[in-house]
Amino acid sequence: MSVRRLNRALLVTAVFSAAGQSVVAQSPTANRLDQKPPSVSNSTASPIAQEGVGTGPTAGIPNNRPINPNSPSQTNANRNARPVSQPAPRPPQGSRFSSLSDVPYMIGDTTGGGGAALQLGGFPTANSVGNGNPTGGEKAGKPSLLIQHPSFGSSRLNIAENNSPVVSDRVYMNYRHFHNASEIDIFSYSPLGGLKSLDINTWTLGIERKLTDTSSVDIRLPILSQLASNLNITQTTGPVTSFPLHDTDVTVGNLGLIFKMALLQSDELYMSAGTALNLPTAPNVSVRTNINDDQFQNYNPANGLPQGGPFPFRLSMNTRYMNDTVNLTPFLGAIIRPTTSIYGMSFLQLDVPLNSSRVDASGTSFANNQLSSAFNLQGRIDQQVLFRTNLAAGKWLWQNDRNRLINSMGIQGEMHYTTSLNDADVIGPIPAAPNLGVGSALGFGNTANRIDLLDSVIGFQTVLQRTLITNSFIVPIRSGSDRIYDFEYSLSVIRRF
Image (tube, rainbow, N blue to C red; front, top):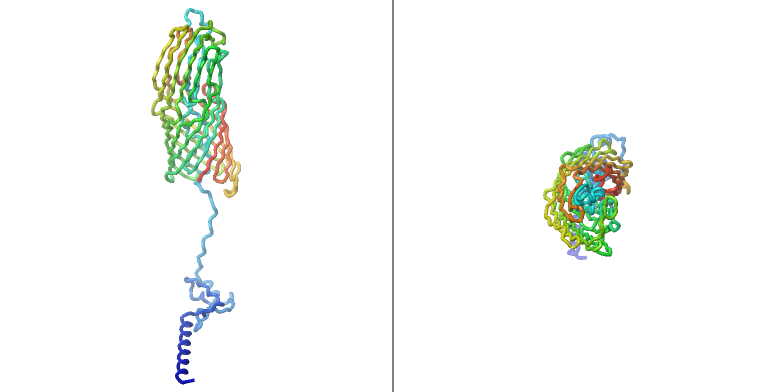
């Protein structure tokens, strides 16, 4: 080998040797594939806590000596070392809602505060017939025609229905069945007439959304199955009759908007206030009557006996009720819960009509081919101002963990009182056919004048995760004109989010 080649080899060897020493000097641990990287020590630990780590040229390379817990150095290290911070344990999952938001919603009785009806007054009683004054004297209490349509007065918003003083985010559906809630009577004292009490079924769809943490807006739209809004009463010679005793229809009710704001919040007490608008989105009601009978027979409503002989009679009458009224309903609500399983709830509300609704009535009648009556009325009627008191008390019979399918089961009782604060506005009487020996008169409104409704409620709740299902039964306590249905069944499903 030549001297030149030998010098070149020695130079290359020296360069690689120097490079290797430089790499070892920069890294305290050898860059070996079979060696795991050392664990990172706590930057806050004191130097004493580095016991067991070598010093000198091999500093930073952990040795494999076992640690003696009884050694003085280890004892001092444990005593003086700062504790390493650990992540806090996750708290158990609690309620997703405020402390009182798990109280169920008030069921309500949804009485529209009605009582208004379209009616044609009765005939004279048997004692007054033949006294030389066929149109005067005492009148029978039973009308010739009576139509208690739900839209006349039973479409007003009840704040207590499916509601809570607590503001929340929810969607809900409510079904209600009112048994024998709408009466229609067309000459029921005569053989051709009839009397029927129809049921009312309502499906209310609603959503409540928070505007802030302490306020919300609730929008609800009822869908109604009830007496049809367009009624036709016809009678011709034969006799051929068409009386709408069973005519029902499905229609949209009045739209409700409820604005609610919290006033006081604590673990045991919650108070809120707000106002609501009842907007007239339900259809108008039209009743058309056409009688063209050559053998028309009068009957005495007091005993159902014929009165006089048959005669030619024609009657054409059109009446229409315009659903124009907007109602403003301010309210106060409160919840109190003395224990985790017992609660009480209340709503006080005032229902004030802001404007009147128009009523049109026109007609003519001919007896024995002679004009006996003609009228044309265009008037407006004001709904009565209502005050409602709603009280509820309930108890959770069983409560479970929220993570299970069925979380809670409870029972709730309620009392609802509705009263009128002013006299009824009645349109009429309008004279009709005075020369028939008929003291009849057409009128519209609440002829009973007063409204005093008292209803009792019992309900049963089941909570499935965030869904509240309530079955309830409502029974009126009073009788007569203050008992506007026989009983009510309600099913509500509320989903909070």
